[in-house]
Length: 199
Image (cartoon, rainbow, N blue to C red; front, side, top):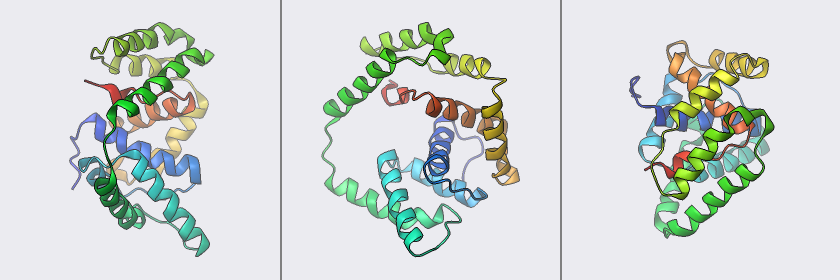
């Protein structure tokens, strides 16, 4: 069973998966505690997001061809576990190349910095500099500042209300709402996954 006091990184992982399904496939269903437990187990196993995304894509295509409706994350469990097993068997770690690609993504983001985030440009520059120097960093201040910057954003409010309404009542907690808002803004402005580099 998912621990209600579990830390921020599991909420972030879980909400990114829910948002992926919503953004890319327009698939919505009531997120129950069972769904949350499935996603939490994936987080515990440290299943990479790429494995999750590929699995979701496969299942959605298959079920669409059969005119079947996806109604919970249990519909993806078999595919995710199968693909993760394959990933573990075949994956030869090449962290150097992976890190280089992710650093290039951050460089690109800084060069094409979204004007809407201009009040925070110096904060992102600071994180970028710390990354270049291979130093640790804290994303909480930048996330708090971003939440304040967009606290009156009607689109964000609407999406958040819709998301919270689709959660089982006992999952509608302030920390879940906060994580959803942050992840939504990261997605909207193409902010890279800085967490990858956390020391």
